[in-house]
Image 1 (cartoon, rainbow, N blue to C red):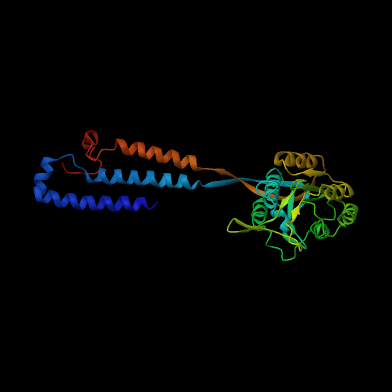
Image 2 (cartoon, rainbow, N blue to C red):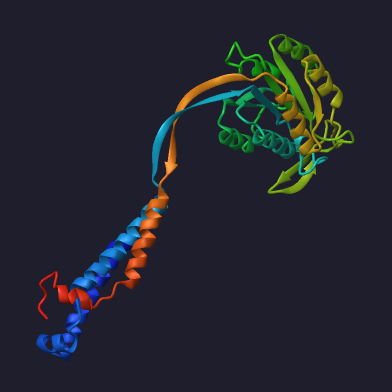
Length: 333
């Protein structure tokens, strides 16, 4: 819109310059005889049409909308809590780029394929820590997910039991029949009693799906600074620690909680499996709300803008012969 006053100012400056130049050339009476068809009114009219064109095009870019009706939207789905292992063992690079980044990729892709399910996120290592409560805001969940790393937990280890216990507090709807906990881990459970607590969770209506990240051969845990490997983690005897994917633990947890174990090496297979499992479940209506259904109105302003530009092209700055004869504006010839 700022171009409109800029055009008007430019027009004014040009008119002042013209008057000054014409005075140097000849007096006003002689100028009228030399250019009898010159019309200041037509120039002003042409300027007005051009300004209207730019005003309409600017409004078209804004895309004004008008609400036409209220529409009721119902959200149906299940509650899904993702428990992501952020222990140091997740830095192992036996799966590209490493276990923790692969875990975040898997969760992100699962969320991308959800419809209207609610999601929550838990980070755990030696202790479990709530990252994001149950929400339908997928953008926020992915943002929190990307900020997760192995340095966020001071207590190291892998306490899957802690993650399951914390997940129980996430489900805020007593009537929700399908409660899902997805555990993404390398399966190294340092407490060893996760299967027992998984059975208790199942009694409360929580199904646990486990996703194993890593491979059976395992790999060392790199210690990096600025992306450069300085060393590898060693045990108290000075031997390099080799961390391996423990599928047996993850399979046992899933079995105790009426769930499924999925190997996380293939992202597409993981996403497809989770999607199929969720499609088979009963959905619960979370919320109903009314929203205004707005319709775009930019096309009207765009049409008028083009129309005024079209008129401006054919507007001449000199007097029109047939209008001169009508003398609508009482001009003296």
